[in-house]
Length: 241
Image (tube, rainbow, N blue to C red):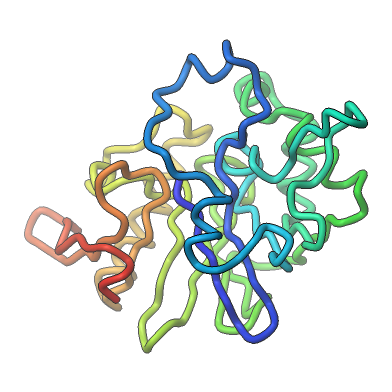
């Protein structure tokens, strides 16, 4: 559940927030949570605190992507934003999808992760009238994807002459690179096939750096065209860029 921190002038933007720590022990027991990293420790390693975050960009509102956006305050016995000085960015189409969930995704859209964002007054919607948003933030474009969940946002960041793509659940890991390998979580797997094919060809053509949120081994990769279709080219750490 890797997040990505972007420092740009006086703005500090965090893409996705992981699963958080406020759910019950029974809830967490369903998942293989491992490692000692946390948002706070990772921010501290870069000299920052969660109160320094100015913007939280949520690719979508499944619990493993937005759970860390909200915390439980034991003093007031209420939920509150974990980033008190930040604006939280979603889009109206996905917000409606998440707050009026279908039976398939209802267990992934937890109201305690979502509704307190709006109640806090810190929620902002990115308008979109096409499948590619041009620069909602400096040096960032956003691809809209609909196969995994409705109106998922995939950021494309320009950095050191490269395009870094935060893959979220369009491509969870290097194991999902072959076209037919899609997640059982995808609500529209045939649409995912089409979206993946178009994106992966573009990624291979342009040597995009793919930042992998859910790959437990590989942080980043590139892909290339082969006679068998688009396949893995190389893997590396983000620090190598």
